Image (cartoon, rainbow, N blue to C red; front, side):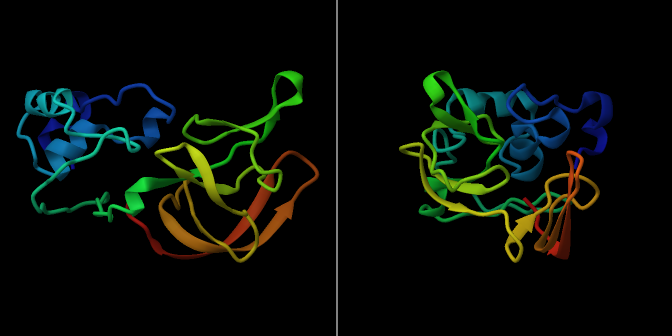
Length: 181
């Protein structure tokens, strides 16, 4: 994906809630995958004109059909699917005066969550109101996508959860195919 522009000349991702090793800069998406710009300067021009929106705050108004090759693939989504987002829940904590709040993997903070929501569950957030629409429990039989390790990107079904006396937990997953995001 980087070809001759790779290694030392690859664009560095800007800081945000995700780790640098796990994110993909918008410059690579717009220039190399979508082929909407030829140079870094053109990509910056597109971004400064606010044609690209992220998490409902920005969007592509219209893009021509593009080819996709390589490990990462972009999938077009429908307008109704762009109105919500799935987020993984970190452990729920209590703030001042005992008010419960939860953080998600992308550093969203939501106060007064549903008491049934626990750590590692997945919530559906409405991007317009920033409210929880629904949640999916992290239980045996549910479909998951692996987000770390050598099986990153694979989709499977949870078969068994082993809770050890120490601080870690082993999840056995029946893996299917790859899901390219």
